[in-house]
Figure 1 (cartoon, one colour):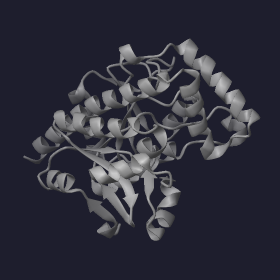
Figure 2 (cartoon, rainbow, N blue to C red):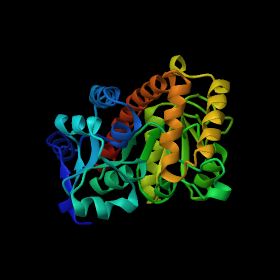
Figure 3 (cartoon, one colour):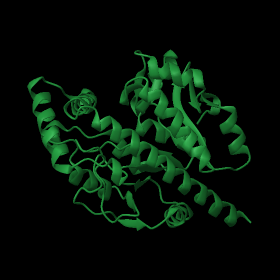
Amino acid sequence: MNQHYLEYAPEVKEAMEKGQPVVALESTIISHGMPYPQNLETAMEVEDIIRKEGAVPATIALIDGKIKIGMTQEELEAFAKGDAIEKVSRRDFPKVLAKKTAGATTVAATMICAELAGIQVFVTGGIGGVHRGAESSMDISADLQELAKTNVAVVCAGAKSILDIGLTLEYLETHGVTVIGYETDEFPAFYTRKSGYGVDATGENPADVASMLQVKRDLGLSGGVVIANPVPEEAEMQKEDVDRMIQIALTEAIEEGIKGKDTTPYLLGRLKELSDGQTLVTNIALVKHNAVNGAKVAVKLNEQGRKQKV
């Protein structure tokens, strides 16, 4: 890969030169995932959380023909307020970088950039997956294919509740993606701590999770890892309420002809309206919680890597 495209923020560059732990963050959650000013406030708070836990945050975006590994305050504000920020997945890199437009990285795109930059841990809200009705629509998130081949551990609150979680986990199993439950033996469902589905392994603490990641790396096994970190109990929504609102939103989406990449933002927007804003509150809480535990895992993984080199 031509390193010419990568541009590191000074804080991130210094950390990597010193061998310190770095945690990748996506920018789509800023430009497309939350309204202003909550998106900017959350982005800044998440970065601060990661610093307090002993790691360095690297929020990733495409700006002026460069892949930014770490964004400035001005860039974060521009993405939080901007309405012309493209949503970037794997297929969009050539266009956005060649045309030097602004692009916010999805889970899949952030994984690609993190691997290119040598960052092993990425914190997000929830991964994409197999959409309900995918047997006829073929609507499957590119996140899953990226997890099948890109060597980055993704810390998330499970898959978004609007998805078919059972089929999402089947897809991950087929492609050999390990799903680790962080202090849980059940896969979380974003707004709720339980989905009714299990995980492949349980990490009892950050060192436990880091040990599994280190073994995977030692063996040279390709592909990502999902670290499923349930939403904090105090921020969890009631499953029956979430299921009811999702069914309403899905029905409305079909009636309005919403398809493809427009489906997720539409459904999440309707859930926010139907819950009187509670889904946004829960979303912010789980992202911050993921940042805490993701940073802890990154620190332990860094420590284990250093010990191996001695």
